[in-house]
Image 1 (cartoon, rainbow, N blue to C red):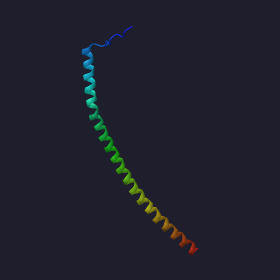
Image 2 (cartoon, helix red, strand yellow):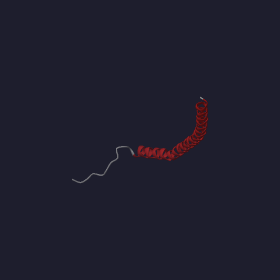
Image 3 (cartoon, rainbow, N blue to C red):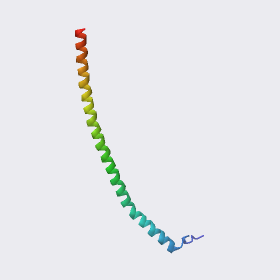
Image 4 (tube, one colour):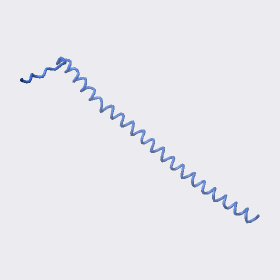
Length: 83
């Protein structure tokens, strides 16, 4: 009951071809990941810029609404004092 030496099920030439193909695909992954990462970073930066613009716009609108609210209160008081 001795162990038999392991025999590959695929021919050695085919195994070598598969290993080379795998190595080639792995070498291309960092390039794809780098491009994907750059694209993600670009999208993220665009979103952050958009959010900043929206915050500024929100502050302007809130200021405008506070001013309008104050004007309406003054006019309401004026109407009540006259009436």
